[in-house]
Length: 267
View (spheres, rainbow, N blue to C red):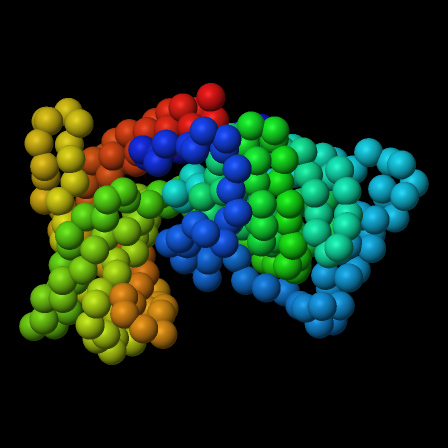
């Protein structure tokens, strides 16, 4: 089953739809999606995971798993079948929509009844046309995105925004948003303690009034991530009812765009 929430335009898929994903630029902030849960060592955990899948393959048992990607922030969730376990790689038959998301994100999350914890995997290779994918660098994780009360979608392109902190106005780009939180990237680092209350303002299109509308909301800083520019400032927000309705409409439209683009790219 797929849980859809918003819509974004995709880059056209190459004719043969084959991806070596290390050639694809990664714009995702994975620290907000999942965190590693090493049980022995990284290599030890990966060996445990591959061994369990290999033993099932040797016994000629069908190995069904579920894959999840947060494609532009939208959860994409489909079943997949393990075809082979060779040379440290896990080869799978995947849904074409999942394949598009995997090629864009170059990661996926695996759930299997063989393990109590989800597994994160690097996507080494994807062939959308043949529904094939090869995964490596497997590790156990905790999926942080599942704890969110609302779906948070990426903005494409980002929207110029302002953080209003004490007497400062800090310019940045609004890169993702939900009705309860958002993230802004800033070029110049400004030290602010987590838990600090301030406000943020930005423009969003209003699909009813057919115009851009200014939104200024109270915000509480959750954290700052990034070791170099741009730095990502994550906030909890407390919009008024009419602001929440506007954000909800925008998110719904983004969800529709993402779904449509995903289908078009997979066809």
